[in-house]
Image: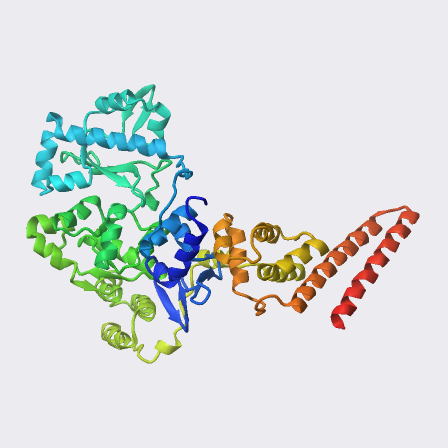
Amino acid sequence: MSWISEDDIKAIRQQADIVDVMSRYITLEKKGKDYKAICPFHDDHDPSLSISTDKQIFKCFVCGTGGNVFTFVQKIENISFLEAVCKVAELIHYPLHMDTSQFQPKVDQNQPLYDCVQSYIRFLTYELQSENGESVKRYLSQRKINEDIIKRFEIGYAPESSRSVKYLKAKGFNEQILTDTGLIRTHDLDTYAVFDNRLMIPIHDENGNPVGFTARRLNEDKDVAKYINTSETKIYHKGHLIFNYHRAKEFAKKNKRCILVEGAMDVIAFEKADIHESIACLGTACTKEQITLLKRLNVPLVVCYDGDKAGKAATYKFGKLAVDYGLNFSIVKNTTGKDPDEIFNELGKDELYLSVHKTVSFVEFLFDYLPNQYDLDNYEDKKKFTSEMQSFIERTCTDFEKADYYSRIRDLTGFDLSHQSANIPAPKKESRNNAAVVRNIEPLKNGRTLAEHGVLWMILNSKLAADQFKDQIGFFQDPVCEELSLYCYDMYRNMDHIDFDVLMSYIEKEDVRNLLVSLMENPFHVDGYNEDFFNDSLMKIKECTLQAQIDNLNDQIKNVQDPMLKISLASKKQELIIQRNEILHRKEG
């Protein structure tokens, strides 16, 4: 911690409003003086994350995650605590002067793989500029992809396999690394490059690390796949990646929107139109991990999939998932039947620019899409259509929108839903989500655990309580309580009070930090050190300790055969019962 002073950490925490910082990542909803939000750290659909403006902490009451402004940024950005401090300082324009002489950056075990992919990217861009790449450059020119875009996206050309293999081995990358990156394969002792005679567009993860490629064929041979992507590797997980995310996220925040398209060429089409906030899931159905990345942008999403039948089906699938996860999105009303790249090339920049402003709601899209999926001359299909429309109208629309939409359903089907809105039950969540919630609910605390939490709250408020607990009991049965107490004792060696900001910065284990956050919420409603509360909690721990010893003796008495040993154990048990009863009488008195 030496390269950032404790005074700086405290000053940054005091000047940074947790609501302002968190709202850059997730959507917050004001509830009284505090805020609620969909938790980004588990599969959440109802707001379960609470933010206290007074205490400047957050807590999820389903998955248990909690902390302050630093730990939130640390967790959502997947960075170290000190990097999070720097990030928050940057966000609030705090002048942080750091001594980095002792700082050891965290080593990413995948760095050799990233280095290998980046080296290959350099080779591909060189090949594009060589004589071998002339035909590819002509193709790019025909697609109106200029030099600026080529450089920005590091577009390259993969020559015949043997040239790629020769380059990669000449650079000293061993076969294991080349296999782990998905750049080469071996068959019958023959090593060959995966990409051969293709236009190459690198794919990066959310942090900008190069992890793979999407590659287009350079001829119209229909026996050859038009596009191929890197196969699943240690660093390339298709369902976890969004193309251009690392470049587009800052533009998205600046322009307060993000445009979701199907493929890399569609992203590049928007780049040609000087629109830089587009991203793509590379033609795959959107996954939970990708939804999490989209939610992290915390801006409205504009879905601009292809206007053909397949594009509309993909829009429908995405929309259903997005509603489940509470994404704020609208859909481009694409009546051209063309994809964004075709719109740019055939109709021009202005038409593409205007197209993303012609948006409709998901329900409006469904009114156009679903009648083609159901036979509205068939009674059972009309019921299914009405039920599906009703579900999404209730979940996504305002009251004045509902009235109009229900009128349209009546015109289409004859079913009148105008008086049912208030009585419609909330849609059932999928069983996987219910299971996740049940699995993450904190188990009910037993008497001793509750008492240990009470004692810890007193220790956090008073050095006297820490000293008395060490003298009278000495340890916590709960290992998380014990670990938090050790942090407290260590802090009391150098100061006479606990500084919660500094304590939070010391704690590395998430379960210990979550316990501290839970205690900072003061569930006992006891402010500061309270001698009676502390003594009552101590008595409960002693009572539970004695009862555990009594239960242990009962088990021993049942299992021994020696009558003299039974008598001895019974005598010890009686002594413990007397001690326990004395405690009970003192508590009652």
